[in-house]
Length: 443
Image (cartoon, rainbow, N blue to C red; front, side, top):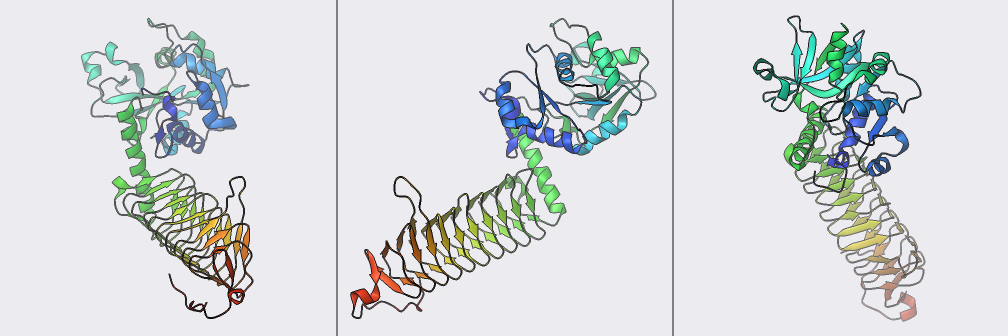
């Protein structure tokens, strides 16, 4: 990979490729997982956490040795043992389950695939009845064997007791390594049955060994995720330019436009329009929402909300039903109440904005004093005039208003109008100031 990052941690569809393999393994029925790590294993452990057991292979002496090390991490011998590779992110849980189901009274199940160009792969050699007789590496294959299109994926399911009894019988190769493929010939010599299960799609057994293959795997996973959503009633205008994570869910009759990235544990409700050119990460969007050319991170959006273009919801933002956020609106750690209008060039951080409030253009909550964050509370049906600055901590009561350009440094009572810098109550200034009445709402 020409990288300081371990291969299995490189991203495919927004997650390390190893995550995809572990997900397929668990959903395929595995009850206990041992992850055999080697080079930079500490980075792998840090990324995966304590959800699996670990075994360290040092030195690395081949696939057979890796399985010996992995089996050593178990306190007992399982009835069935899956051996999978961390760099096969296209493997599906259905295929894993089929491998386990196919084992029966056999000693080994080999996952194979039919490919148009088998160059570089070991060939699965069968007898006249279709029974697996051997796996022959290309260098050792005859001309007839090289013409075989069925290849060995390197993924197996073993009878556990048989595997434990025969691992020690593997002989070191000329390269000084122990190869798991030698177990196939060993089982055949013992007149034990070896079965092969064909992958539904040859792409499932695709390993990732360089950046080109990484991009191909990413595209294949994204296409698969798009197909699954479209089968559930989601319109994806251009799957080739739509980027989905494996945990994303989208409701029926929603439309995903080109250039949209949905990552992490993101959920989109029904009848939404998302994109184009939108990034949503670990966020929940309700029903009947529109998110246009905007970015949402760790946020919650309720029903019938319109966002964008060019808005940014940062972690902790909650937008309640019927609110509208226009261009260049930014919200962080705040609740925007039901029906709030916040159309342009505004920042709300560490605040609560009450239902029905109008947030004028250029309104800012000044929530940071250089040392600490402070909160702002704005009541219901408040009119915040253009370029209002709310210096936290401060509270604006229900039905109050601020004049354009106001710098609010102290609490505003309900129903009152303040204006100026610093802002004062209208009656403190006296006289007709020429300001519009609070009922006249605009930009």
